[in-house]
Amino acid sequence: MLPEDRASSRRVLDVPEALDTLERCYRLLASARPTRTPLSASSNRSTPPLVLGRFLKRPIFDIIKYRITRLDHDLFDVIWPAVKKLPDNRNIVQTVEEDFPGGITAPDYYVYDVFHEFLTPLLKDLHNINIHSDLPLHPPTDFDKHKPLTKSAEPIVELNVDPSDEFVLSGVIECSRNLDGFELPLNLKIGQLETIERIVTTILMQEDFSKYSEQNNPESDQKGGNYYTLNEVLEKPSEICAALASSGLLIALCDRDEIDDCTRLHGTHWPYGRGVFVNDDKTVAVWINVHDHVRVLVSTPADAPGELGLPFSKITHIMTYLHERLDFVWDYKLGHLSSRPTYLGAGIRFSLIANFPGLSKDIENMKHLCAVRGLQYRETLDPDIARISNYQCLSVTEISCFNDFVTAASNLLHLEKDLSMQNSAHIATMLTNIFKRKRSSLSDLDNPEQH
Image 1: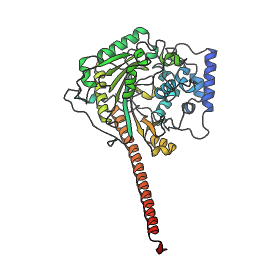
Image 2: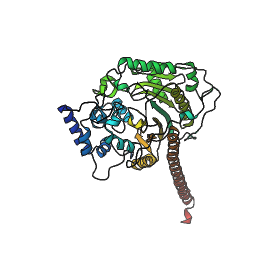
Image 3: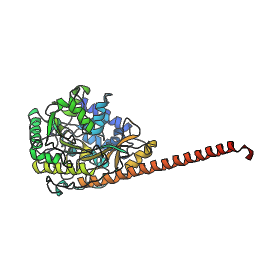
Image 4: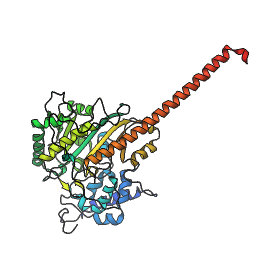
C-alpha cells in the first residue's frame, strides 16, 4: 500500500489463492526472459511474456504484489492478458491482441500510480520512449488549433501515401477519450453506463454534428447518422455489424459466453449500456463504453485507401467538437488516460492494411524495417498482407503522431515499390534474354550450314 495517496486501497492483498496465482504468473514471466539482451516492446518480435518479464523483476514484484487499487484491482488484473491461457477463439484472441498488444490492461485509472515502478518504464518502452529518461509532461492536444468547421471549410490537408493505389487496401484512424467524473466502463454500474451513453449520443445526434461527420463529402445529401446498441451489433446475423466490417469500422468484440473472464475484460453488465453511432455514409463510427467511454473511428476513402489526410481532417474536427462540449480525464504526464495502455497520451492510432508482396518475402527483415520506423507490424491471414500502425502516442501531440506515421508509412511503401520495380526490371531482363536465346536458336535452325 502506498502511503499518503488516493489511488490505493486501504488494505493489502492477503488472499493466499490470489498470491499463489501471482507467484505462478511471475515464474511464467521470468521463464520467458531470453538469455540474451531482451528485445524492446516495439521490436515486432517480442511476445507479451517476453516484454513483461523484462520489467517485472523479483524486487519490484515482491513490493507491488500486495497492492490493491481503490477499486479493488490487483496486479493480476493488470497482467492477465499476457499470462492467461485464452480459449482458441479468433474473436477473443483478436480482442486481446488488438486492444492490449503489450499484454497489459488498465482496469482502472489508479493502476498507473499503484504499480508505477513496474508500469512506468514499460509504458515508455511500449511507446518508443527511452526508459532511462524522465517521462516529460504530455503536451496539450493540438486538435483545437484549427478553427471550427463551417460548411464551406476546405479540408486541412490532402495526403495520400499510396497515390497509385498499388499497395494500400484500407485504412482507419481511431481516437479514444474518457469522460472526467466517471470510472472506466469496466467499473460502471448500469445507471452510470446509461448516463454516459445518453450524454454522448445526445451530442452526436445533434444536427450540427452532421457537418463534422460528413466533412469532405460535400455531395452527400445525408444529414446525420444512427445509434445502434451493442446487442444489435452482436446479433447473428447483424446487418450493421456487416456494414461496419465492410467499412473498416468494426472493432474487435467477443460475446460474453466466449470467454470465462468476460467480467475482467468488460465488466459485469456487458453488453448493456454500450453501442455505436454510425454516420450516414458509413465513414465514421463512434463506439461508446467499449473499454473506453468514447472511441472515434474514421476510415479512409474506399476509392483512395491510402488517403490519410482527409480522414485525419475529419477526426480533427470531430474531436475538436467533442472537446468543446465534454471534459476528458487527463494526467499531466500520461495525457489522456485509457484502459488500453498503448492509447495513453494523444490516444490516437493510425492503421493501414497493405499488400507487401516483396518485403514480406523476408518476414524478419520486414519486422525490422517497421520497428526502426516506429511502426507496429501485425500479420493477417494472407502472408503478403500486413497491418501497420504507430506505436507512440505518449509524450507527443496528435498532429505529431500523424506526421510521423505518414513519413514512416510512405517510406515503407516506397521501399516496397522500389523492390517491385527492381523485380519487374529483373523479370523484363530475364524475359529479354530468354527471347534473345530463342531467336538465336531459331536462327541456328534456319541456317544449319553455318555450323
